Image 1 (cartoon, rainbow, N blue to C red):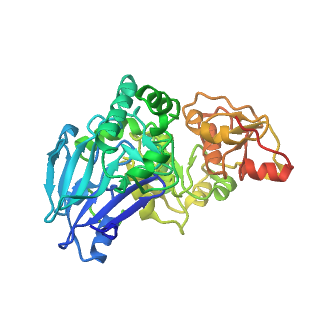
Image 2: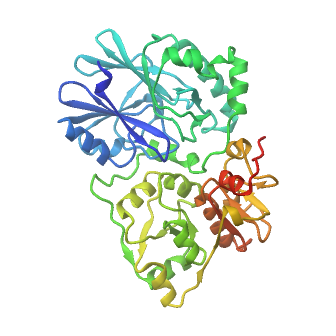
Length: 452
């Protein structure tokens, strides 16, 4: 089978790839699909295909699976037997094969990233054509093993080493490998920059495989694990039970008046302001959380906002409501109340409290600085003397930020999220947000960044 029959559908925000596989007979297979089915249906329709199967490599922690959506449209769900799905699916174990009419899909037990993990070898006759490695072998990396049970992190890392050595690296060197997790995924440890590889390339270039022994591999893998969003701890169960099915149509975002939003907030709803940070800074609902709508919106929504509260959005007229809802749903947000009609202007006219946040350019920014990027980003280069607190830690309420601080990240969006969380927590609303990041600050002040 030629590689032209495998079409990647990339979610840049979550750092994941799913795949639509043309089976050559008018049917297609979707592998590790994300929640909203429209992208897969559109790709299939463009090629005159019907999606006959939807295949899961493991219970995903970082997104809500789309297999149940595709099943509602006629696809058969294929998943690891050990996943224990609560909805109809054909379960496979090691060595089991799915006859695809000239092609076959062979399940390979590859525990490690998760206990139930399967990789799938696509066979054209007797010849291996592709490996869908899920979260086992990635480009220059492997997927992390600490997302199930902290007490099993090391034992799963050892299982992953054995899966790689006994099952995956014995495959032909020229075999194309299509991972699910990739650049930008918090499941990847560490993150790479490419999304497809070969067995031989990983043997020669993957630093984790170069460790040489099981003990060395485990030490290197566990030493590289950073933080991850708390929603990772709940989505495996969502995917095991089976998420609610919405269908392929556009998502609906109800319009709410000020009185309704005010009542929702009194009852515990969170207001999420999805506008660009410049508009949020100029005026926003007091206590609202800034998460600008962009590729990584879903990740930070899941990291900062509880999933058991009603959510109200503030958006501009030129923003895509359908996209906003789909981004929220793909990380498990079901209680989407709607969007505030008239936005902040309507809130202000109604006499409700509106706040501002100061923005500062790189050339004018002064300390103390608080850098809210991930630890690996901070270590790679930060402003001299800057304090460090990851955005997730600030959101937890565990970090005190000194009054008058300049909060910074790579561009400004995460820093604004941090400032909004500080305002919401009433720890400290007296902070500024840097527009830009450390490199812009260093260029404006003719100095070098500090590396750890």
